[in-house]
Image (cartoon, rainbow, N blue to C red):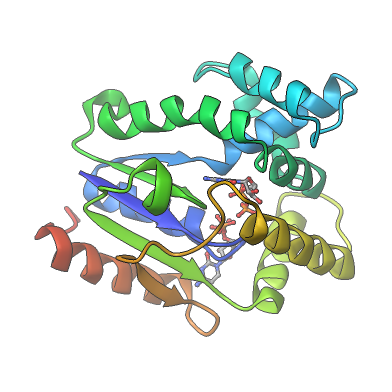
Length: 218
Ligand code: CDP
Ligand code: CDP
Protein backbone atom coordinates (compact mmCIF):
# COMPACT_ATOMS: atom_id res chain seq x y z
CA UNK A 1 0.00 0.00 0.00
CA UNK A 2 1.53 3.30 -1.06
CA UNK A 3 0.27 6.81 -0.33
CA UNK A 4 1.89 9.52 -2.51
CA UNK A 5 1.86 13.08 -1.19
CA UNK A 6 3.23 15.83 -3.41
CA UNK A 7 3.20 19.60 -3.36
CA UNK A 8 5.31 22.76 -3.30
CA UNK A 9 7.57 23.91 -0.46
CA UNK A 10 5.97 24.34 2.98
CA UNK A 11 2.53 23.27 1.78
CA UNK A 12 2.37 20.93 4.78
CA UNK A 13 3.22 17.65 2.98
CA UNK A 14 5.75 16.52 5.57
CA UNK A 15 3.46 17.18 8.53
CA UNK A 16 0.54 15.47 6.79
CA UNK A 17 2.66 12.50 5.66
CA UNK A 18 3.97 11.80 9.15
CA UNK A 19 0.45 11.95 10.61
CA UNK A 20 -0.90 9.64 7.91
CA UNK A 21 1.99 7.22 8.46
CA UNK A 22 1.37 7.21 12.22
CA UNK A 23 -2.39 6.78 11.80
CA UNK A 24 -2.13 3.82 9.41
CA UNK A 25 1.06 2.26 10.83
CA UNK A 26 2.98 2.98 7.61
CA UNK A 27 6.62 3.95 7.13
CA UNK A 28 7.31 7.54 5.98
CA UNK A 29 9.97 8.80 3.59
CA UNK A 30 10.52 12.55 3.12
CA UNK A 31 12.15 12.43 -0.32
CA UNK A 32 13.12 16.12 -0.15
CA UNK A 33 15.77 15.12 2.39
CA UNK A 34 17.52 13.06 -0.30
CA UNK A 35 17.79 16.05 -2.66
CA UNK A 36 18.85 18.29 0.22
CA UNK A 37 21.60 15.80 1.17
CA UNK A 38 22.89 15.72 -2.40
CA UNK A 39 22.85 19.53 -2.61
CA UNK A 40 24.69 19.96 0.71
CA UNK A 41 27.27 17.29 -0.25
CA UNK A 42 28.08 19.17 -3.45
CA UNK A 43 28.39 22.51 -1.59
CA UNK A 44 30.69 20.92 1.02
CA UNK A 45 32.93 19.52 -1.68
CA UNK A 46 33.24 23.08 -3.05
CA UNK A 47 31.17 22.24 -6.14
CA UNK A 48 28.28 23.93 -7.95
CA UNK A 49 24.91 22.19 -7.36
CA UNK A 50 23.91 22.94 -10.95
CA UNK A 51 26.98 21.09 -12.26
CA UNK A 52 25.73 17.76 -13.62
CA UNK A 53 28.88 15.74 -12.90
CA UNK A 54 29.33 16.92 -9.30
CA UNK A 55 25.63 16.48 -8.51
CA UNK A 56 25.41 13.02 -10.08
CA UNK A 57 28.51 11.84 -8.17
CA UNK A 58 27.01 12.98 -4.84
CA UNK A 59 23.70 11.29 -5.66
CA UNK A 60 25.34 7.94 -6.46
CA UNK A 61 27.25 8.10 -3.13
CA UNK A 62 24.08 8.56 -1.06
CA UNK A 63 22.72 5.44 0.68
CA UNK A 64 20.00 4.93 3.34
CA UNK A 65 22.47 4.79 6.28
CA UNK A 66 24.47 7.88 5.24
CA UNK A 67 24.89 10.13 8.36
CA UNK A 68 24.24 13.33 6.36
CA UNK A 69 20.54 12.34 6.18
CA UNK A 70 20.19 13.11 9.91
CA UNK A 71 21.86 16.54 9.88
CA UNK A 72 20.00 19.72 10.95
CA UNK A 73 22.01 21.54 8.25
CA UNK A 74 19.64 19.98 5.69
CA UNK A 75 16.78 22.16 6.99
CA UNK A 76 18.32 25.53 5.99
CA UNK A 77 17.18 27.62 3.02
CA UNK A 78 20.67 27.29 1.55
CA UNK A 79 20.22 23.52 1.50
CA UNK A 80 16.76 23.90 -0.06
CA UNK A 81 18.10 26.07 -2.87
CA UNK A 82 20.97 23.65 -3.54
CA UNK A 83 18.45 20.78 -3.48
CA UNK A 84 16.27 22.34 -6.15
CA UNK A 85 19.36 22.87 -8.36
CA UNK A 86 20.60 19.28 -8.12
CA UNK A 87 16.98 18.14 -8.54
CA UNK A 88 16.96 19.46 -12.11
CA UNK A 89 19.87 17.15 -13.05
CA UNK A 90 18.44 14.02 -14.75
CA UNK A 91 21.24 11.72 -13.44
CA UNK A 92 20.47 12.80 -9.87
CA UNK A 93 16.79 11.93 -10.25
CA UNK A 94 17.70 8.59 -11.80
CA UNK A 95 20.17 7.79 -9.01
CA UNK A 96 17.58 8.52 -6.28
CA UNK A 97 14.78 6.59 -7.95
CA UNK A 98 15.86 3.12 -6.74
CA UNK A 99 16.23 4.36 -3.15
CA UNK A 100 12.67 5.72 -3.19
CA UNK A 101 11.04 2.79 -5.00
CA UNK A 102 12.72 0.27 -2.71
CA UNK A 103 11.32 2.14 0.30
CA UNK A 104 7.84 2.01 -1.27
CA UNK A 105 7.95 -1.70 -2.08
CA UNK A 106 9.86 -2.82 1.05
CA UNK A 107 8.90 -0.36 3.82
CA UNK A 108 11.37 -0.54 6.76
CA UNK A 109 10.35 -2.50 9.83
CA UNK A 110 7.96 -4.66 7.80
CA UNK A 111 5.33 -1.87 7.83
CA UNK A 112 2.23 -2.77 5.78
CA UNK A 113 2.53 0.38 3.69
CA UNK A 114 4.55 3.48 2.92
CA UNK A 115 3.89 7.19 2.66
CA UNK A 116 6.31 9.08 0.42
CA UNK A 117 6.24 12.84 0.11
CA UNK A 118 7.95 15.03 -2.47
CA UNK A 119 7.32 16.59 -5.86
CA UNK A 120 7.02 13.65 -8.26
CA UNK A 121 5.88 10.71 -6.14
CA UNK A 122 2.45 10.37 -7.76
CA UNK A 123 3.72 11.14 -11.27
CA UNK A 124 7.10 9.36 -11.52
CA UNK A 125 8.30 7.50 -8.41
CA UNK A 126 5.07 5.62 -7.56
CA UNK A 127 2.62 6.18 -10.43
CA UNK A 128 0.61 3.15 -9.21
CA UNK A 129 0.18 4.44 -5.64
CA UNK A 130 -3.25 3.49 -4.26
CA UNK A 131 -3.88 7.04 -3.00
CA UNK A 132 -2.38 10.30 -4.24
CA UNK A 133 -2.68 13.72 -2.67
CA UNK A 134 -1.38 17.03 -3.97
CA UNK A 135 -1.19 19.58 -1.16
CA UNK A 136 -0.76 23.23 -2.01
CA UNK A 137 -1.29 26.77 -0.60
CA UNK A 138 -0.55 30.32 -1.72
CA UNK A 139 3.14 31.21 -1.78
CA UNK A 140 2.60 33.89 0.91
CA UNK A 141 0.98 31.42 3.29
CA UNK A 142 3.72 28.89 2.63
CA UNK A 143 6.52 31.42 3.21
CA UNK A 144 4.90 32.40 6.52
CA UNK A 145 4.70 28.73 7.57
CA UNK A 146 8.34 28.16 6.66
CA UNK A 147 9.48 31.29 8.53
CA UNK A 148 7.74 30.15 11.72
CA UNK A 149 9.21 26.69 11.35
CA UNK A 150 12.77 28.04 10.90
CA UNK A 151 12.31 30.29 13.94
CA UNK A 152 11.08 27.31 15.96
CA UNK A 153 14.21 25.38 14.99
CA UNK A 154 16.42 28.36 15.96
CA UNK A 155 17.60 28.86 12.35
CA UNK A 156 17.95 32.62 11.58
CA UNK A 157 15.81 33.78 8.61
CA UNK A 158 14.48 37.01 7.10
CA UNK A 159 10.83 37.05 5.99
CA UNK A 160 11.40 38.69 2.57
CA UNK A 161 14.29 36.31 1.80
CA UNK A 162 12.20 33.25 2.64
CA UNK A 163 9.42 34.48 0.30
CA UNK A 164 11.83 35.24 -2.57
CA UNK A 165 13.65 31.93 -2.13
CA UNK A 166 10.34 30.09 -2.20
CA UNK A 167 9.25 31.81 -5.40
CA UNK A 168 12.59 30.97 -7.03
CA UNK A 169 12.29 27.34 -5.94
CA UNK A 170 8.65 27.09 -7.09
CA UNK A 171 9.71 28.35 -10.51
CA UNK A 172 12.67 25.98 -10.78
CA UNK A 173 10.67 22.98 -9.56
CA UNK A 174 7.69 23.53 -11.86
CA UNK A 175 9.64 24.51 -14.98
CA UNK A 176 12.35 21.86 -15.05
CA UNK A 177 12.30 19.38 -17.93
CA UNK A 178 12.53 16.20 -15.82
CA UNK A 179 9.78 15.31 -13.32
CA UNK A 180 8.43 18.85 -12.88
CA UNK A 181 6.18 19.68 -9.93
CA UNK A 182 2.59 19.05 -11.00
CA UNK A 183 -0.37 17.07 -9.69
CA UNK A 184 -0.84 13.54 -11.07
CA UNK A 185 -4.05 13.33 -13.13
CA UNK A 186 -5.56 11.05 -10.49
CA UNK A 187 -4.41 13.09 -7.46
CA UNK A 188 -6.77 14.66 -4.94
CA UNK A 189 -5.76 18.34 -4.91
CA UNK A 190 -6.06 20.04 -1.52
CA UNK A 191 -5.57 23.80 -1.20
CA UNK A 192 -4.61 24.25 2.45
CA UNK A 193 -4.28 28.07 2.44
CA UNK A 194 -7.22 28.45 4.79
CA UNK A 195 -7.06 25.04 6.49
CA UNK A 196 -5.22 24.01 9.62
CA UNK A 197 -3.23 20.79 9.85
CA UNK A 198 -6.10 18.91 11.59
CA UNK A 199 -8.59 19.79 8.84
CA UNK A 200 -6.12 18.70 6.15
CA UNK A 201 -5.51 15.44 8.00
CA UNK A 202 -9.25 14.66 8.20
CA UNK A 203 -9.74 15.33 4.49
CA UNK A 204 -6.73 13.21 3.59
CA UNK A 205 -7.94 10.31 5.77
CA UNK A 206 -11.35 10.49 4.09
CA UNK A 207 -9.73 10.42 0.64
CA UNK A 208 -7.43 7.49 1.50
CA UNK A 209 -10.44 5.63 2.94
CA UNK A 210 -12.43 6.19 -0.25
CA UNK A 211 -9.57 4.85 -2.39
CA UNK A 212 -8.41 1.93 -0.25
CA UNK A 213 -11.15 1.12 2.24
CA UNK A 214 -8.59 1.65 5.04
CA UNK A 215 -9.36 3.42 8.29
CA UNK A 216 -6.79 4.81 10.75
CA UNK A 217 -5.94 2.47 13.63
CA UNK A 218 -6.45 5.11 16.34
O1 CDP B 1 6.83 19.32 4.03
P1 CDP B 1 6.44 20.72 3.62
O2 CDP B 1 7.61 21.56 3.29
O3 CDP B 1 5.40 20.75 2.54
O4 CDP B 1 5.72 21.41 4.85
P2 CDP B 1 5.79 21.06 6.41
O5 CDP B 1 7.20 21.16 6.86
O6 CDP B 1 5.04 19.80 6.70
O7 CDP B 1 4.88 22.20 7.04
C1 CDP B 1 5.26 23.52 7.18
C2 CDP B 1 4.60 24.11 8.42
O8 CDP B 1 3.23 24.42 8.15
C3 CDP B 1 4.59 23.22 9.66
O9 CDP B 1 5.13 23.98 10.71
C4 CDP B 1 3.14 22.93 9.93
O10 CDP B 1 2.81 22.90 11.30
C5 CDP B 1 2.40 24.07 9.26
N1 CDP B 1 1.05 23.82 8.72
C6 CDP B 1 0.72 22.63 8.09
O11 CDP B 1 1.55 21.71 8.01
N2 CDP B 1 -0.54 22.42 7.55
C7 CDP B 1 -1.44 23.40 7.58
N3 CDP B 1 -2.63 23.20 7.02
C8 CDP B 1 -1.13 24.60 8.20
C9 CDP B 1 0.14 24.79 8.75
O1 CDP C 1 10.37 20.97 2.63
P1 CDP C 1 10.27 21.66 1.31
O2 CDP C 1 8.99 21.37 0.64
O3 CDP C 1 10.65 23.10 1.38
O4 CDP C 1 11.40 21.06 0.38
P2 CDP C 1 11.79 19.55 0.20
O5 CDP C 1 10.59 18.71 0.05
O6 CDP C 1 12.76 19.19 1.26
O7 CDP C 1 12.53 19.57 -1.22
C1 CDP C 1 13.69 20.34 -1.47
C2 CDP C 1 13.86 20.39 -2.97
O8 CDP C 1 14.15 19.07 -3.44
C3 CDP C 1 12.65 20.86 -3.76
O9 CDP C 1 12.59 22.25 -3.95
C4 CDP C 1 12.78 20.09 -5.08
O10 CDP C 1 13.59 20.80 -6.01
C5 CDP C 1 13.54 18.83 -4.71
N1 CDP C 1 12.69 17.64 -4.67
C6 CDP C 1 12.37 17.05 -5.86
O11 CDP C 1 12.74 17.54 -6.93
N2 CDP C 1 11.65 15.90 -5.89
C7 CDP C 1 11.22 15.34 -4.75
N3 CDP C 1 10.53 14.20 -4.80
C8 CDP C 1 11.51 15.95 -3.52
C9 CDP C 1 12.23 17.11 -3.51
